[in-house]
Image 1: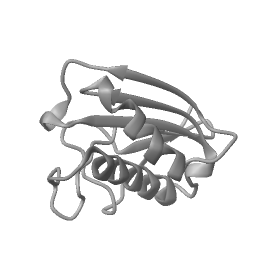
Image 2 (image 1 turned 180 degrees about the horizontal axis):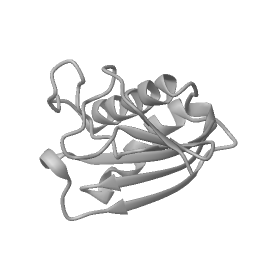
Image 3 (image 1 turned 90 degrees about the vertical axis):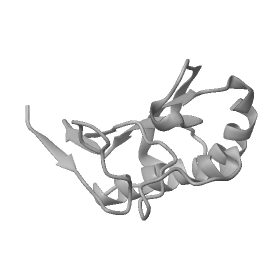
Length: 126
């Protein structure tokens, strides 16, 4: 089994010992993306909707670097610091993904790195 790592400056650099994404067996696996602005390396102030847009722009940049796009997402996992933001996330999510939608799980978690409100990881078919 071979694997290839993906790295782009159009998405935030890893904040630990991991890759932005890995390609293996025709699939792209992204690491969880926080709402970090790749230009500043920081989570910008703003609404939960603004932060969700940032996360999906980061996922989109990684997918593009790997030669795919959000239309080829087959699975996403959404981690929320507050499940009360679920509907706000859905509203923005629907702007980035079209039917047939990827499979998805969503969880409230106790905390996320850097105090983020959400984190999303995805699997894409190449």
